[in-house]
Image (cartoon, rainbow, N blue to C red; front, side, top):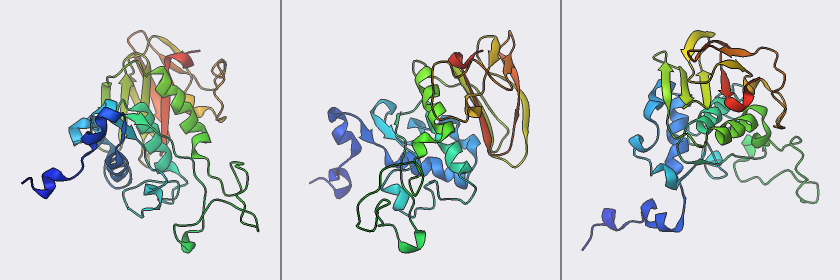
Length: 253
């Protein structure tokens, strides 16, 4: 007779049906973003024991884990840093070539009332229209998250991570072939560094500097502070604390 451990249901039992939700992803990523070091994410994915990338649906949080009170789940609530940790976690997820990412879009609720509150409603209990305000958080419309979805689409054909760099702690950078480059600074000091981007020579707009969540095809025709990539693929960055920079080939000016 098979032991209980061997007879329990496994995610792989469903691979023949399609993609499977990888709940461990958000917990492992959140643990590094909130309490660990971003440098540890250099091999994040299957090397961590997660399911095969092409079968995994991944997220920082979803409607279940957001309410779990798990200290390792990063949400728009925690920690109280103006959403910086949540933004950076989603930037990493959308830049990193593992799994099929899913973006949370949620509503706020009074924490003292527990986790079972429904969405914003009128006095009759009718759910209010989604307005991305008045209690609706709408994480999917945060400008940085929306523009990283475009980054994901532009780099989708490149499955590798190239030119990884870290400072030994919470400043990291990496390229997606010759199609995209991201640098994340989750420290309290400015990150000033010349790094290999892998991108073609030219001037690029930091897509995360765009304030609108809309991504029209001509949004990058103008840019206040372009980042210049030289003929060798290098560029100099000055990244403020708790901020990130993302470049891709469709943001070349």
